[in-house]
Amino acid sequence: MMIRTGMILAAGAALALTAAPGMAQTITNGFTFAVASGGDTSVGTHFHSSTGGDFGNPSGKAEVGRFFDEEVRGLSEYNLAGLSNAPSAFVTFNVFKAGGLFDGANDTPFTGTISIFAYQGNNAEDISDYQAMSFASIGSFGVGPGVSVGDVFSFDITDAFNFAIDEGFASLGIRLQAVPLNPNSQAWTFDTFRLTSDNQTSGAVPEPATWAMLILGFGAIGIAARRRKPALHASN
Image (cartoon, rainbow, N blue to C red; front, side, top):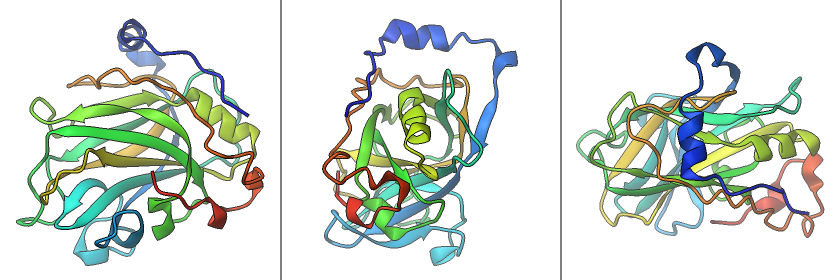
């Protein structure tokens, strides 16, 4: 089974950026957290941001990058209860900090690329979401000079959103991770994650994504799509 989608061209992205502000609508808000690995960066081991306030960091933050030998990934999940297929859906979020959550340790931003993946969520903060198998590659965007606190990024996830609805997912998960990894303690932090009906990108424009929506083994794992994913753990 494959999600059918077309290549989203830069011209299409530019057109979306001109959508009338009055048409803006929030489909649903996400809840956001960050998970870090240990020395083995393929597996998450602890939170950097959670509702429990791990390490004294604020909740609702998606930190992405490095903390010494740890990789940190930002995650946000969206409760799909009561929602139906949408003609357009974007994952939208803000730049909270040009740096990580640990002042003096990883509060320096990096220059590079952040990739976005969709996974089957369960409306809970799970350390295992760090490596949960993705079912779609949403795209990527550049960070570095020119990206500022308060900038807003939006990415078209219409196909992934409608696929999750059709398959009866309780929750849609979105994961941000740095590619390539910077070997030093450097990061970016994002917040205010929501699903919107329009592209709300402002400030620096994300580099065009390939938007190749790939189902990664959903048939092989038996679209146990109505159940949560202990068997879906695989690193990207």
